[in-house]
Structures are given as C-alpha cells and as structure tokens.
Image (tube, rainbow, N blue to C red; front, side):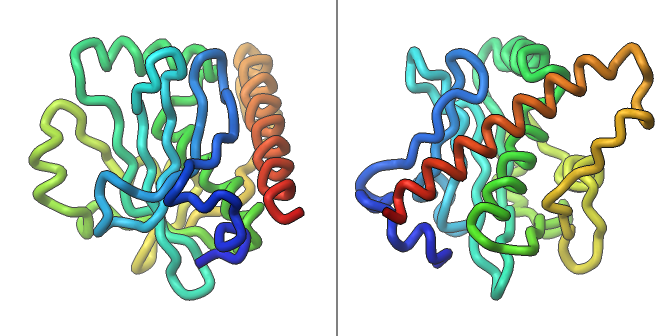
Length: 198
C-alpha cells in the first residue's frame, strides 16, 4: 500500500478522501474500489455533487514500485453523451476520461511514485467491455494521447508537455485555463494529503 494512503484518518474503507471540486458541481474523491475489486484496490471517482452521482471512475493498484491504472469507465445512462460534452467544455476542452488520467498522474507523483502504467486494450476484462455497449473506452487511444509509451504496459509520463508554441494560437487561451485548472487541483490534492500526515 502507498505509505501516504496507509496513514489516512479515517481510513478509506470508512470514508472516501474528498479532494473537492475540479469544476463547479463536480468533485473528485479517492476511495476503495467498490465497483470492480478485481481490477485495482483504489478508485478515483468523479461525482456530480448535487446528486452525489458517480460519473467517471478510474481504478488503480500497486505494481512493485509503480502504480497501475486498470479501469477508466464513463457514464452509462440516458443523456450521458450530452453530459460528457458539457464536462469537456467546462474542463477547457479536456475530455473527462483524459481528465481522470491527468488527475491520476498528479496523484502518483504526490504519493511519491516515479512511474505510472496503464493496462493496454488487449488485456482489458473482455466481459466488462462487452457489458458496456453504450460506452466503450479505447484504452490505447487514451494512454497514447496522454503521452504514454507502449511496452508490456503503457508507461505514462507524470508530467505532460506544456509547450504553448506547439499549440495553435487560437487555442492557447483554452490550454492556459486547462493547465491552471490542473495545477490548482494538484496543489489542493497535495495539501489535503499532507494534512493527513500531521
């Protein structure tokens, strides 16, 4: 178990750790994986705060001296496509599945790990993929677009390239806002976890 997670008070099995809102009305929590326990012990949850509704889920586990993303799962209800569009716009063009991976990158570093991996599409649980007919995640696309390099697993960089010169000028303002959102949330996550150590 990551050392910083071993000392949470109360422990995650009693109460999730709430990192607060990433955007208005949508918060991210760290929890025990209660949904797919064979696919990672912990979970990052993106919830719609007014209804406490789970919108996105990312599960992960520990792999030697690294962390491993097992599942990234999106909404599967009427109106979910429209919700994803709304979230993408509110997150300055960052689609929710990619947001979850970016938050996981930040959490990995905050927990003191140097490496983060993702499970390739071909190793994903086939029964879950078949069950999720209405929302199919392309893991290889997500990890590749998140800067990953494929070997046995996808190896994901903890820091993504942020060279604004590589971005079309008309999109730079959007990217600045996106980076500011992520940086602010990373700082808050670090502060909340640091408070748990005191």
